Image (cartoon, rainbow, N blue to C red; front, side):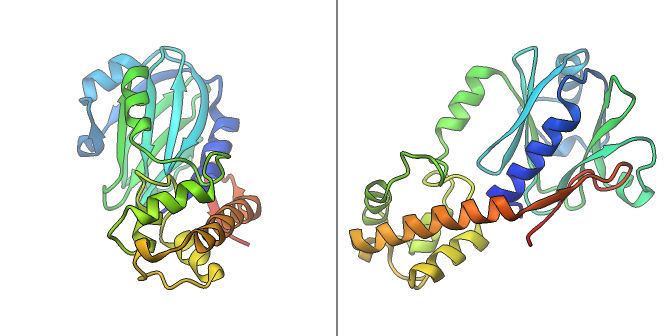
Length: 234
């Protein structure tokens, strides 16, 4: 499942590729990945809209449109955004759930083999409400050791589960939670409430450092007609 650094890389590269493009057509072949909107409404509200920017929130890729709508993609385990210049392999096209045709004749596919991910179209108020339910980003200056210590002391769960709970900290998954706890010398199964402020400071420091290092070390290769985004760690 993509975590914060991978999703950030996808969003940045997608922004570079499609910012300023206009959506001219929408074809939905697997409507079960849609949330909060049906295929006809998705097409009606996005056709003719121009992409203003692509960015990340938690593990979501967010595409801002000039209509104020936002296309919110949660890839989960097998989801991917593929940019097609007309040469997308059949093996990829077979698992495409929808395609946004762009004004430069390319298509942006949401491909999801297991169809566990979701695509949602949100108006600004709905997105703000949705975003408020998510926790702080680990690199947010307000994500302090004192704040994390309070979250841990108030939980009955294992410390790793608290770190991975998107309502508490946004964007952290299994890999980065394990890495941060290992570097802090803390057993992932340890009760969160037993973590003292000093250890909470260590977790905060390693969590921020792991996220920052991983994000800076990710490389992303754009391959037209295949995987539009292939992210891997050095």
